[in-house]
Length: 113
Length: 113
Image (tube, rainbow over all chains, first blue to last red; front, side, top):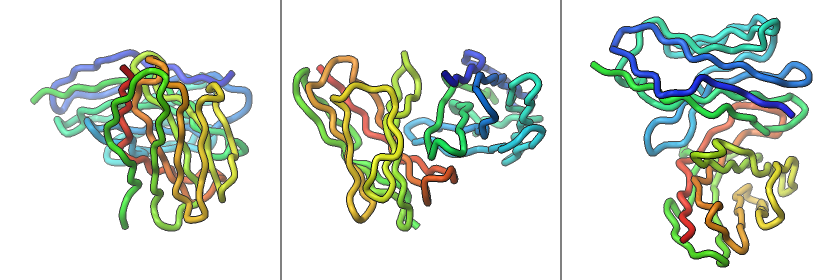
């Protein structure tokens, strides 16, 4: 079946450091790809998305590029802030599967001042 | 515009009991999806309802069921609770069932003793 694999956390960085969170997927076909973020005590928020190969999603300084050849969707940010501390989830969805998201295991990011 | 609301926020039950969780979607949203979040299994899709009809169902036993009302509010029910049902149950709403951005509620934390 379809699956998403993320690097395990926690990832601990100092403020202004560069962030990469790896995400790879296994799927039959070409899904849409997403990054969601979950702050403590809250539900998930959509951070960015890409719907086809080579698309780049971006939001709030975060970006990720849909790489079909490596089945990857790595999340990057050039300079993290303390406020970026959260759990990040990579997910996929097929257009003909309604709103059914398949999530990776999540990666906790901790940013220290 | 009010976000997705879930009630109750916290719930404690004992094995063998049943429980009903409620989700009120964003006004105008007709699709409601439910997810279970646990430390061991991560985020897993339970089911999606659109216009009072179940559109998709995840790989969960029949003890997990749901429904949607004409005002798009949704409930999920878990019968004969097991210890492993302890989880954060997240509800997400979307405009329709052809993937659009899903907005998540804060979740209901269910503890089974």
